[in-house]
Length: 217
Image 1 (cartoon, rainbow, N blue to C red):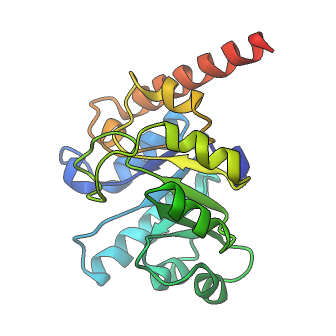
Image 2 (cartoon, rainbow, N blue to C red):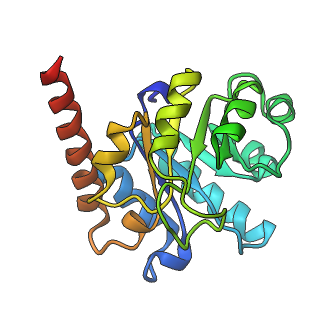
């Protein structure tokens, strides 16, 4: 299983955008395309529904040796033995999540500004997400923060940075160029007709940027 530092493409589920496909179908296709990590996110499901889906997706990700992250629900993450949890600004503290899940589990946290990222880094999460980078209807967390904030965060902290929010094939190179360690994708992948193919295209774009940067050195 890849370590957080090795993650490049982070796919997050959203059944409302999956065009009638199940979360299992979406996740299987995303992994087939090369997703490095999967996050199960569903703000509308009941606890029972969320748990049942998590059990299914845990089996899929475990069979593929892909890290499986649960959004918000520390109780479900522990129940299904997920690899970690992703917390929002209003969720339980990182330290409490570690106490519940254990020291070897992954804990990430969402931030929406340089100030929040700097404060979050003091809590020693395994990674920090920053966004929305561009306008998006998927995550209602305020106006776009743009790519410059990624550069600012990278200059101040060494924790892996996951960029999220409205990132498309047209903008992924700019996000990578700004210093993001990993790209989180929701609608661009989940709503795609060819999920696996779309993930491959994102990876190709990212690799092209990485190759260009290496050539300049």
